Amino acid sequence: MSSKRNLKHADAARVLGVSSKALRLYEDRGLVEPGRTAAGWRVYGPAELARAADIVALRGLGLSLVEVQRVLGGDGRDLGAALANQQTVIEARMQSLAAALGRVRALRGELAKGQTPDLAGLHQLDGQDNGPAVAFDLPWPWGGERFALPRLARLNFLIGPLGSGKTRLAQRLADTIDGGRFVGLDRLNDGVAAPERLAADAALRLRIERAEAWLADDGATLCPALRALLVGLDGGPGETVVVDMVEDGLDEPTQGALIAYLRGAIALLPRLILMTRSSSILDLAAVRGDEAIILCPANHCPPSVVAAYPGAPGYEAVETCLATPEVRARSAGVRVTGVPAA
Image 1 (tube, helix red, strand yellow):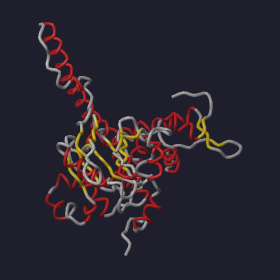
Image 2: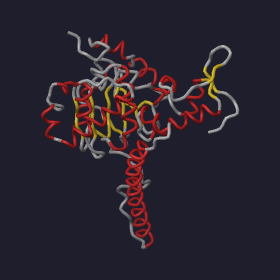
Image 3: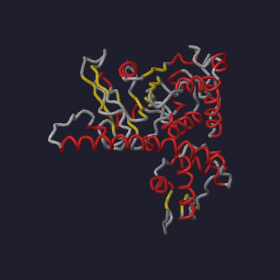
């Protein structure tokens, strides 16, 4: 990445494709050191932008901030494991492309013979992971209107004000989607992460311990609520996991580390639908093109997908639903430390 001019912090974040908050986190962890103007404003020159671009690329491979620091320091062991995961993802894409190519050739062969081809599955000919289509009649408190998504993204945020019906929508999504599973707010007490279960399943325990190590590297507070959530999220790419209030019981650093972890590992995780009202989980400036926001409006209007840019229909409604973890903790009766209030 080259630039002959210095960029302000917000402009550098936009060029790098990350949020200003993420770029500030890299600075706080000592990974990049921007210059300063005479007035004290942060500026990023070519060297700082190149360094930050390397950090963004390594984060995109699923490395924690501590692992990024080691790689930038010349230790490539963490990078080797990340590249192995990336190879798995790319090979899966290649298989999907090969299957799509075979389908295209078969259709062209049928046409060349004057046959009428079977048009089922035409939407899958791009070889992309388009996700399952979703369609059902909305449950109460709606009036049975038809809700349909042509495709479900890998990472979806489900948001709405109190009383909007988003929990019922989440449950219906989990029931309707093939391979769907609902992780409710009782996850801490339903035994899903009980020590005896983890002790009996060595592979699961290892996956959870690796995830916790990654999250701790990124500043997360390890706690029972986080472990229960990680166990609930555990699964394969063929599943879809719908989570009720993903931030429940997690403090702000943990929420920030969690969403970074999920983005970094999303290709290896189940498809996710995360109910949230936290601006740390759903940072609108950080939403990527392969993610989606589903809004349940007030007054039981039908849900809709909202584009993540100011001025898009529903964008302001999404903004008004979001609050910082500190505000969310007060409104939910939970301490900011993540420990339930007495």
